[in-house]
Amino acid sequence: MQDLSKQFATRLRRIVTPQAEPIPDSAQIPNSAGGFTWAVDQWARLDRFLVLGTEGGTYYIAERALTQENARSVVECIAADGPRVVSRVVEISTSGRAPKNDPALFVLAMAAGLGDDITRALALTALRTVARTGTHLFHWLQYVKAFRGWGRGIRNAVGRWYTRQAPAELAYQLLKYQTRDGWAHRDALRLAHPKAPSVTHDLLFRYAVKGWDGVIELKGAADLEFMERIEAVQALREMAPNDAARVIRIYRLTREMIPTELLNHAGVWEALLDRMPLGALVRNLGVMSKVGLLVPGSDAAHPERGLPSTNAVARFIGLQTHTGRVAFRRIRIKSL
Image (cartoon, rainbow, N blue to C red):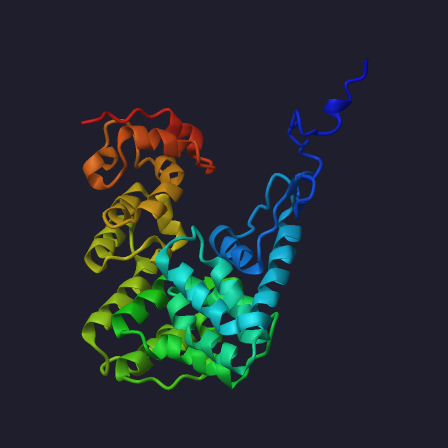
């Protein structure tokens, strides 16, 4: 006998609806997995995009298609309530809920180019809050090119990004985040034409645009602390590894400020390790093992130097893709 109850749910025996079919009398829609689900509104989709992004796509949908779908939702949100979009971008970007800031920068660029006058003004005002590093600024400049040209609004917004930073913070940004996405600080400053609010800002702008020659022009007019740090970065190009390691410790330099040829020496990495953030530490575990810094029994492998615990290191090793990964996986760090 054919059991027709398996093909249709009755009052007496309710059968679970197959995944490939919508629940009867429901508002379910097809999803990317070939099944059915309930639709979310455009604002929920905006939040998902800002937090999760689309990098790599998902198991069921490619990155390009997923980005296009989310971009269409963002356009709808901007058309419905642009200021709300900008407010949401700022909130999620500054709260640390998103693992990456790129989706927030992308939506902010869309708001700056596709929104009405009020939305564009709010988006440009929020640039300094959302683009907190030089890398963020360069990403945003690359994104915004797709939605508008360099008008007065963008020039003023980029100019404020440079002029409203304290000299110490600006010097750090110029020295650490030098180029990204085909952009450099020289390009942004030449297009924005900001007016330096102080002599020190003027020196830093000259360094970004003209290099060391621009600094020499005002050598005696700026704060000595910033001058010494710029001189230290410049002098690294001619230093031996041991001397470079001492300079790195004195002026608290980061890996991005170090010439490439010096990054082949364990002593230089040991000096950088003193103040290396955890994220940078994890990314460079393979390199540090390759150059011979992380070897069995070395002081650099001591937990007090900033490396994670033994168990944490074992988990991190599996994430490495550098050529030094295999060598590092053979190391056993003795736990205290």
